[in-house]
Length: 108
Image (cartoon, rainbow, N blue to C red; front, side, top):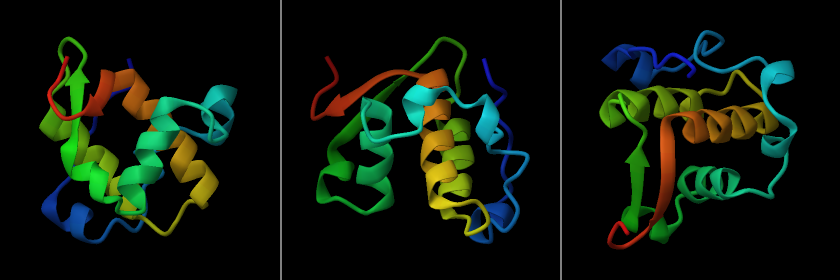
């Protein structure tokens, strides 16, 4: 499992350099380098501020602190440093590593 890194309040507010938080492009599996899977869909929904995002639940994998993972993901998503494609693929990949599933409404 990829390490979840702590993010300070300053890093979260001003996420300038996220190189240590985002997997290198060549290590991200191809399935995340497009718009075809559920994790890319979740990234886009949250990133672009869909009204449905407020109803999303995410089931963390064993041993994952969802609050820590959420800060890590939010930091990467807020940075202007990586290309959008790298950011989307990397965040989608990280979400798949740290969470079993996601959905709307009540968790099933």
